[in-house]
Image (cartoon, rainbow, N blue to C red):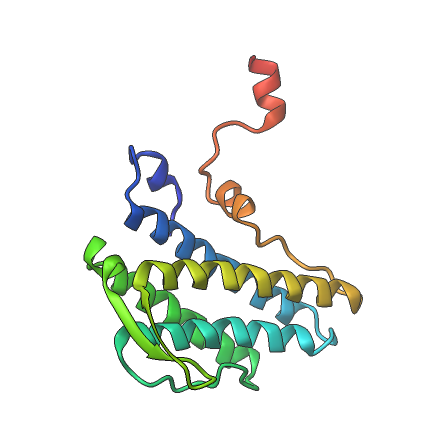
Length: 177
């Protein structure tokens, strides 16, 4: 998704903001997976972390949809399977947000992996998904660097810059100002 559409919205809605966060997560997941593909021989823990990010997204989507997840939260899967899961997750999140504010404010009752039942607002779940992925992509970057690889930037601001949402680079701003 092109982030530039968000700069034209004034003011953004909560749905717009969540859509923005999940679009960033999809971009960051794709970049992190591409980096793992380009860094053969890196510590396998990096793939374990990314597989967990994607499986956790799938688990939360399943809870939001009222279905049973088909992937374990800590799966042992290939990069190709991660790519497929990332694509499916991004499409499902986008479809979920098509229901607008109603999709965010509803309560979702689910049972966690420890067998405890909770009820959470969908908005809180989606914010957790975005933040959880950032945490584990950071761990992936750390493990990749520690094993001699070069991690890619997956920070939100890197995505904003990459998608053209920012105005002028600092050097240009200095010359103009």
